[in-house]
Length: 425
Image (cartoon, rainbow, N blue to C red; front, top):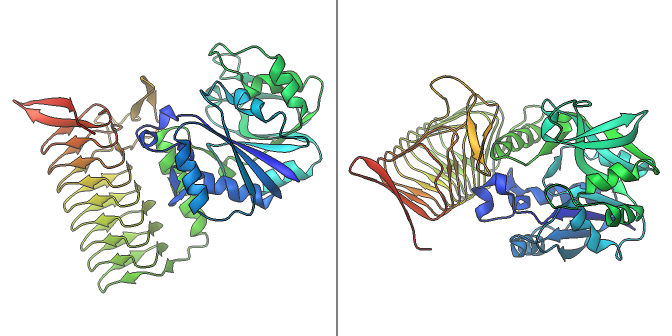
C-alpha cells in the first residue's frame, strides 16, 4: 500500500487576506480547493492512505474532506502544533510509515499526473524539479547525471542553476533518521530540504524534471489569478464551450465559455472567453466579461459592469457601474455601485504588494486589488493597484484606498482624510 503525506499546517501569511478565513490548501482554483487537486493526483498514482499534517484552521480541512468528494483513500490527520518547518511536520509520522511514500507540499498544483507517476514507478527515491525565471526565491537543486547532489535554499549569490525544488518527493523511512540528525535552520525550523541535502550524499535521489507549464505554486496572492487562468485553459482545451445554464437573447459570446447549471447570462452581456460562470451565478444585463475571468457559485455581476481576468469567489456581488480588473474578490464580497479596482500604475512599472511587511514586486504590469471574504464597500470606492483588504472590513462611500486594510476594519472619509477604526466582530 502506497502512503502519502500532504503538508498543510502553515498559516499562509503571504496569501493574506484570503488566509484570514481559510488555510491556503482551501483557496479555490476553478471553484475547487487546492487540496482537491492534490488528492486527485495522489489517487491517480495509486496512493491508498493519506496523512494530512494540519494545524491552522484545521477544522475547515476536516469539514471539506468530510463533506466533499470521496477520493477513495483512507485519510488520517496529524496536528503539527506550532509549525516549525517541513521536516518538523514529517517527524510525527516516523512510526506510522514503513515503506516508500509520497510527500506533497500543500501549496503545489500539478496540471498533469505523469511526472508523479514517473517518480512513483521508477523504483528510486525521487524529487520533483522544475525550471523557473526567479530561482533565488526557491530551493535550488544541484544535480549530476540525473541525481541530486544538494539543495541550496534561496541563494542570493552564486546561484547554481534555475532548476528548483518542486515540492513533491518519493522517499523512504531513511528520511526520518536524517531529520533527527540535522540542526534547525537560521529560522529555527527543521527543514526537509536540509535532511535531503545530507541524505543524497549516501542514498541516490533521482531528479525528475517537470515542465513549468505542468507545475504551479500557490505562494503569493497573484498566484491565485495565474492558477485559475491555467486551470481554465485546461478545462476549455481545444476551444470547446460547455453551456448548462441559461443564456438569454442578445448575448454576444466570443471564445470558449463554461456556464454551470442554474446560472443565467442576461441580455446584453458581451463575453470574451475563456470565461467560467459557476452554478446559480447571475451575470448582466449589459455587462462586459473579459478573458480569464472565473465567476464563482452564486456570484452576481450587475448592469454595466466590466470584469477582466479576475476571480470572484462564491457569493460575491459586484453592483452596477463597477470595474474589477486583474483582481481577486473573496467569498461574500459586496461591492457598492461604482466601485473600481485600478490595475495599472501611472509610471507603468510592475505592481508591488506588501507580503509579511515586505514590499515585493509581482512582476506584473497589471494587477488590481485582493479583497478578503465578506468585505463591503459603499458607492464610488476606488482601490489602487496591489492593495489588500482584510476579511470582514467595510469601506465607506467615496474612499480611495492606497494602503492595505487590516481585517475587521471600518475605513471612512472624515474631513477629507481616511480614518480606519476597528470594527466589532
